[in-house]
Amino acid sequence: MGKASKNKSEIFTLILNWEARSKKLQQKYDHLTDADLKFDTGKENESLNKVEKRLNKKQQEVLHIIKKGPPKES
Image (tube, rainbow, N blue to C red):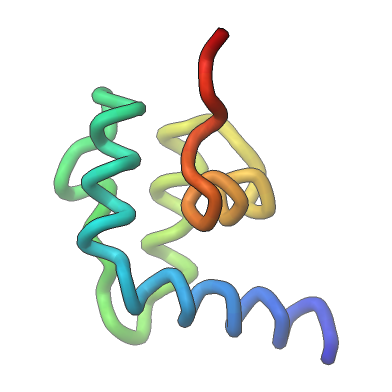
C-alpha cells in the first residue's frame, strides 16, 4: 500500500467517528472553531488542511492527534 493510499485510508477511518473526535480536539485546542472542524464529504483533504493550519502542525502529526488523542500535558 502506497503512502497516498494509506493516508486516504487513515482519513476515511477518522471520518467514521469524526463527531466525537472533533469534540475532543475542540476541548483540547479551544481556538478550533466548528468551521475548522467541519468535514465535507469529497473534500476530506481540504478539511484536514484547515485543521493542520490552525494547529500549525504537519498532516501526519494531525492524523496522529486525531487518532490517538492530543498529547497529555505534564
